[in-house]
Length: 105
Length: 345
Image 1 (cartoon, chains in turn blue, yellow):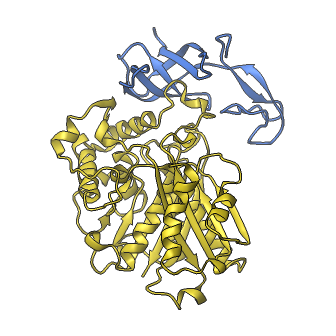
Image 2 (tube, each protein chain N blue to C red):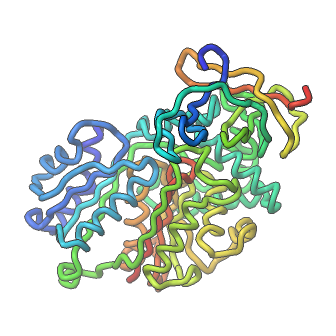
Image 3 (spheres, chains in turn green, cyan):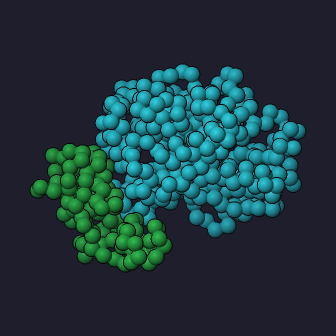
């Protein structure tokens, strides 16, 4: 993720994602390895944050079994719409960020 | 005051009131602070030499986890008298779960609280005013509690106009971290019968769904771990939800109290918003987390202490008259785990 690409641990045995990341597959307990994963998904809920340094629209996205909270620039959003990840990375303070946009944009 | 001294305060009061130190065979410390050997140091500072002393950490529901552990030790016969103490400083590492990168940049508890609130409003028509009423009620109760963090009442208007944090959650919909300590003593049945006004633990239910927000539950309009835990607790205690007369519910945010009404079965799913105005069950008589503050590891212990005081008739100005069945509802990390304790007079 530091390079701006979303890779997640995928199980060598059963193919499931270990998310949040883990070297152990929680389903079958085999080892996982990092793979690039599909980053389009569905927007479940969204709202606006006014917290200093974290202002803006954010929402819960589900993409192929991975659920996370991402940010949006647009507020032209609707629950259930298809969305895609536009950017991701790790900030200097070690926190992750995931930016999304409506899939059509 | 340093953490360990803070932890000793309620214990010292308890010991000075006549509890025999020699009989205490477990000292369990509930806290998210990571000082080494903390529980044992507390035992030493209090002049207690128990069989068992260790720290229990389950973030915001550490307290009820510690009480459940004490219960288990006594029920198994490993000990007869367990001192459970919770203590936390305002800047505790327990205020944030750093590992959970599923939350991205929006890692403060208020962010998941806003998502739960928006989801519930959208699906069931719950209103911001209903959420605000939870805050008004809990602040009103806290005003009668000399140990509460906030002693001032707030009006509905003040809550509705308070600073927006993450829509629809406003400042007065939120609890605040603070310094705090609380202690309870659990004893075996044999010892309890020799003591003044013992209160009984009738049922315990616990459920740990996940550590991450991502895997806590499918449905964003319910705390699934609390639903499961409550079913077990009611079954174990052979009670029904509406037999509960007094309860301390996990109101770290006002929406969580509304969800609790539904998850505990006081009302059907979706009806939580309307239940805020009810008068049948005394909810959060100490002021809840909103009124008392949220010293993370202390909260569960303080909730149990309040319900125990109420059932023993020792709650003074806050006394809920004639209550005989009480409940504690304690959550952790976006409701990823939950503990429910049912108590009886």
